[in-house]
Image (cartoon, rainbow, N blue to C red):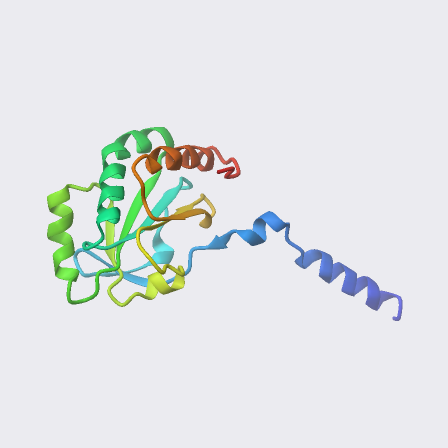
Length: 173
């Protein structure tokens, strides 16, 4: 019995060990958001058939957010064709301003999915303190890249990262 116990402890310790790369990548937390029809959707339902998902937190009052999402919208068709990426925009506008989001989106003619995080549940779960704040999620639902702020040209760098993730390669940028 004395000989078996240390072996059992060693086996349990070895079985619970994960490579460092795996522990650095966090899964997208589960939170409730609303679609533009007012239906509650859980973020655990965000998926893209094994292809990358780009999630961006933004607000109607945030000029850099609007610049970023407009730039992404201009190249979205090309990105989808080459990588299959799906863009999901999460508005952090509060309940008082939520009614402005759908007309705003329609006016911009953005082609990606848009959800409302009126109470900030998803924003808090993702530890977003300022917008724009974007996350790239791989086929396993793990966050593999994040970025906050926006400068013209950032979308070109981002596309290189999306291509890496779509190809199943580790993110090097």
